[in-house]
Length: 437
Image 1 (tube, rainbow, N blue to C red):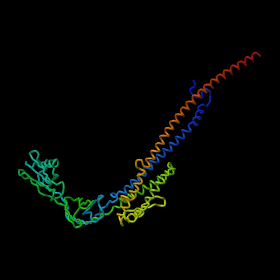
Image 2: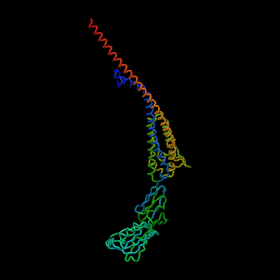
Image 3: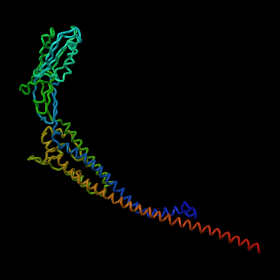
Image 4: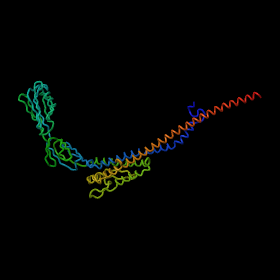
């Protein structure tokens, strides 16, 4: 039985089949090449989407006024005052004089031999800001250690911390208000049965006292958040300090740096794609041209004369890339920070919103990139179906050729056997004739 084409006849039937299949495979090769091209375009579309997304995020950042209006607080005397700000702070200056720091109320008991000494039996009431903790001191539950633990672990603790200090005169129970200020003073009611137990004041409760621009302010704590809008004052010591609130140019500079860098990245991506997978796509040229026109064009804000981003130090170089001149930006901020913010983040005309809105036409569902991806996906599906049909035909053709050539191989083998037999018979006849002669 012949198991390999050509074994019986000696013909290179595998080579003949391979050659014929190579011709038959040409349409399949073209389809696979088309699919590869489409897949490259899908990948390129993904790269483009990523670069556009980065620029859109950067545009949204410079279009967010709350991000750009970051104000930095600077104290002239940090030994007296420090401060921090949030997004609601505005550019201004203040004079602050601190006359008194807030202080927690602190009390200490009489001295006992050690912390395990029992102080007697009776009741002890501790009141802070109208809330009272009542302790019943019974035998076996009335040492300094036990009183300390009972106070600290009480679920209805009114706002007092208990501790023990060991000094030369012995062990003392110390009670400290959890919060500072007069309103958090600690009041004790001691049962007369607790003979010899008393507490004296170590530190009086104090409110913070200060003036801001000459106006008196009293607060229970040394961190004050409700005097200057968007500013948290941290009182450190007594004395005077000036507080200067200025736009944080670093935040704005960083946001503009990212905008410039993301534009340049997108432009480089567009250039690479035009020289590669999307060379025939005119959309790329339109995208770059529209972005350039938006960035370099005039910006009209309210009744002011049209302005340009180049006035903020954002301009195009000869290479086509954007650059940011930080010195020019600093000058623009010093001259009119409001106009700078308007150019970037005005809700209707600012460059941030303008670029964000334009790029959204590419990024949104059913937008330009989404539709392109759907189109390319449909093309891939059609080509896959065509490849499947072409592969099916090629497989059938290979089966047919193998069947035909196997039959030919078998026939040739039979003919070869017959030829060999006849040659033997003729040779035998010739030998017989020669012997008779």
